[in-house]
Image: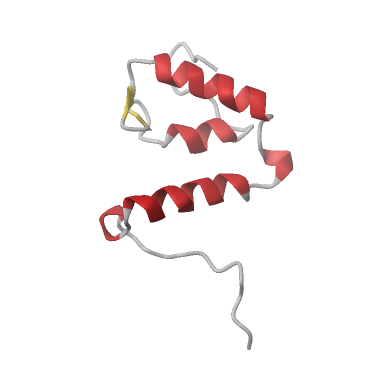
Length: 87
């Protein structure tokens, strides 16, 4: 049986992944989301801008929910988890 070219890496721990590999995987994940599930590029940039202004952003993660904001901001069904959402 041929190997699936869409095979997903099953590494469990970020510490086992180089920083470069981690970011490549994250951006590949965002890029490969179905188009109908992603927000427009302009909205994505606006969401990230608002996240950068938020006191709950720490090292690319939201301190409220623990998500990686670049992934969360890319998806239509996601929203800012703050009590007063920024987006």
